[in-house]
Image 1 (tube, rainbow, N blue to C red):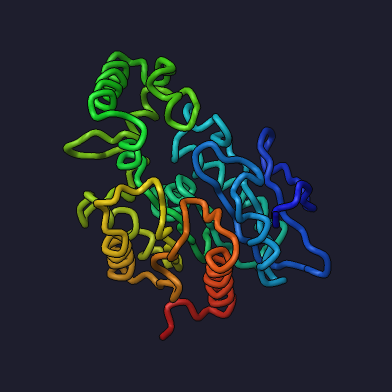
Image 2 (cartoon, rainbow, N blue to C red; image 1 turned 30 degrees about the vertical axis):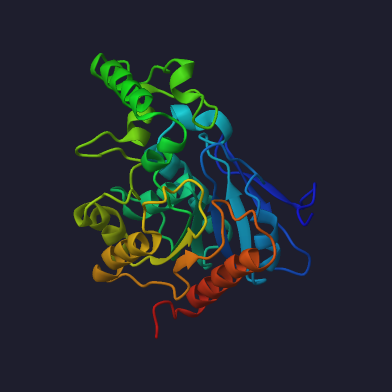
Length: 308
């Protein structure tokens, strides 16, 4: 077992109620920061590869896990927009500590929505140099592994009714959201995740395979125009992706929207063969993840992302 039960680091309080954990290593004096945001239900040290990735990073980088108010079971009463605002506070705090350092955001699962939202939503936030999306999947498409179509549609109708009645911040009955990663969920967040058609306008719905090019341009395209370097790491054996989804084609559409807008794409972007949703696999699969992340960070530091 490569993950130890204790982890050296520094706990930073970046606002009155929230903290971030900076992984520390001996003989390392980092000037740059890789921020990590996990998926729904995650918190500090819950992503399987987090400690091994920290240990593998170049000495010039520190890995910092941001604890958001949506961590653990808090996601059901939060939103991507709230996550982005809290991330901005954390980035600003660390930029005050390392004012000349490079800043890269990395998300797993719904952490990818947070990262892409940071790079594309309206509003002013501290600038970042790079973004890594590891396992950017669709919650709407993943729901078919949890709910029957009939139950899913009934849940949507209940949530929609509550929102129309002005009860969007009220928590739905347990049978609606507890099967979905075990947290209670507001009607508003449920509609964001379920993103009912035909418009599919949920804030969480950034990576579904049936979204048209205009939707990708409104997220990946905006990020590309803002000068953020990007690497997509789509898990090849992600158990939350329906078999009908062509992963390579989907990633290519994401990358095209980004590059067509002038974005600089990391050379390691693409499918991560053999990887599960959170890259639980040790050995070659995990090492390939480390390798691609390290190359991307090195290119960020040298200013060579996108160079051929």
